[in-house]
Length: 390
Ligand SMILES: [Mg+2]
Image 1 (cartoon, rainbow, N blue to C red):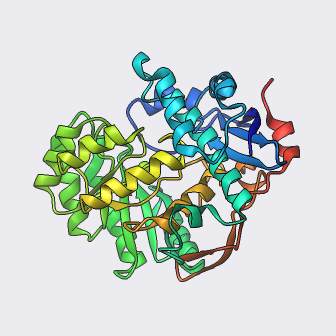
Image 2 (cartoon, rainbow, N blue to C red):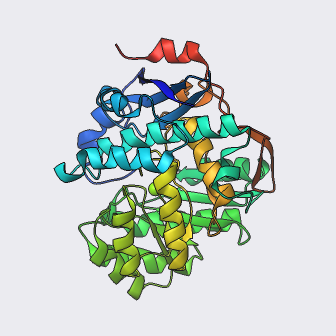
Image 3 (cartoon, rainbow, N blue to C red):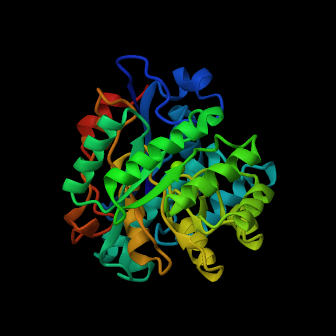
């Protein structure tokens, strides 16, 4: 089997109205008009001479056309190769820009889309699900949490908690940190959430890096969250602050989680060697695909660190990719099952209409996947054509 073509599409759905940042992160108010101006996704299709096509997705927060162009530029490196040689093709892509310093950022996200499409081709050719190629059904039921509650009036939050509980979730994540100077007030709301949810609901908190400039706040909030029995404390600091995370982990009892803004096994290895994290959260659409994310999860396992895939605001493609990785990884902890869009009044067609998640059953906070071959993704090309940028 040989690769005959690589096609890429930058999809963008503009917001019908300007929205404020749905999460707190440094300078959110200044950049929200660009970052949250549209739902975006970049799709990659890899075609073969046996009529099998695989699909993948690049993490796209800005400039999908840049990602699309990188994928198309790499095409000559793939044409004629066997798509099942995933390690070789990954390494060829990596080495193309390695000594130019492109070991992070857009280049890695472009590699992710291509790599996931290769695994999809391999699974379809072998007529098995991708999780089978990875090593089998280590976790046939995937424990999930609802992502995410945003701090608002407690009456609204109570309704949202009830909805998630009614839908079968026993675990939820809370976005905090929007106002670092006002953290005590946010903790009071978290306390209300805990009271309403009850002690049998697992809660986590996600700061999206907003205490990166202030270690004391990061420590005080971490202690307060631990008192309220929260399970993990996610991204309190800047993504590359290894010393800071190691310090926090030494000084706090709550588990420290991070990794959604990290890119490759070398950067994760630096955190693991320093014992800086309890939980890693790589996103396969950012960490250069399934080939690299598997290595990151396995490496973390050797450091007694659990794997909780980040899925974020990407499409159902990468949500599905992460399910396959979660099915396989021995140190898999819990899956981020997104339940919210950036804009409360505008659905995201790149998530809901592009393809459906291969879920056979969701019960008691666990997903059982459909019986699929490859990734199990069936793309609605009308959505691709409707939202593809020229
Ligand atoms: Mg997060």
